[in-house]
Image (cartoon, rainbow, N blue to C red; front, side):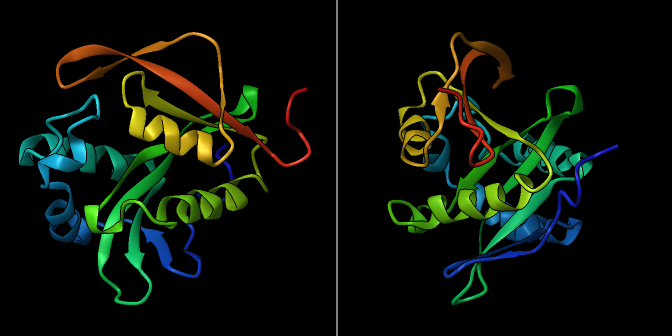
Length: 178
């Protein structure tokens, strides 16, 4: 069993998230091929076509990949996904998010995460976000949207090496721990 609809179409004031399809490859790779997007990310080589192809294929296989569009222009500006659902813990991960640098620094990331959280919290109590321990840009973004840091770290294979990651969580409104 999986949570209800991990590939919804979600519409906000400035973005639309819709299910990723194989046809999204050229537009998503065009965004992801910018090395500066990945410079502080543990998968710092994800801008390479072969590395991004593996990321893209894993997203499609996950059943939770979403393509992000700028609502005003219809342009593809990035991707995110739901994955690693743990039914016994009533928990799912949101992650693998990247945005074109033209859409950094504004309200885009917060809007994307708010749309995704509102959708999935109707079905799952806890959402986790796994962030590279030294990825301070993403850690600040998690804190801005109310993520609570869990103790400890988790190792994940990135760019051919085991890299430490921290876990943030956001519980369904009304379910935050004391």
